Length: 164
Image (cartoon, rainbow, N blue to C red; front, side, top):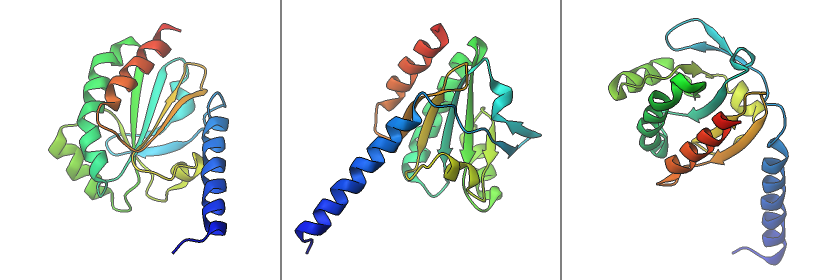
C-alpha cells in the first residue's frame, strides 16, 4: 500500500522527469561516436546540416520491434531530402541486433551502444526513445516509448524540420 508521502515523492519525480525532458529540447544534442553494425564509426557531429532522428532500441523491446519497420519507411522516404535516421541499439550482444536488422530488412544505419554510454548521455529511461535533431544540432523533439500512430507525428515533425 502506498502512503501519502510515497505519492508525493512519485509526483515530484514525475515532475522532475518532465522538466528534464523540456530542458533537453532546444539544447545542443550530446555528440557521440559509435561503431556501426555494418561500416565504420559514425559521429553525430558529422551529420550537421541534416535533420537527424536518433532512435534508441533493443531487440528485447516489443514496442521497438513494432516501430522499426515504420522508421525504415520514413528513412527511405526522406533520406534524399537531407534526413538521416540513426538506429542506436543498446543490446550487450551485437549479434542479436544483426539478426533482427537482417530479418526486418532495415535500411538505415544501426549503431552499437552496448556499454549504454550514449543512451545515458541522453538520459533516456524508456525504450524505444526517439530524438529529433535539427540541422544546427539542437534537440527539437524527444519521444519516450511507442504509441501506435506516432509515426505520423514523426513524419510531420521531420517535414517541418526539413522546411526550416
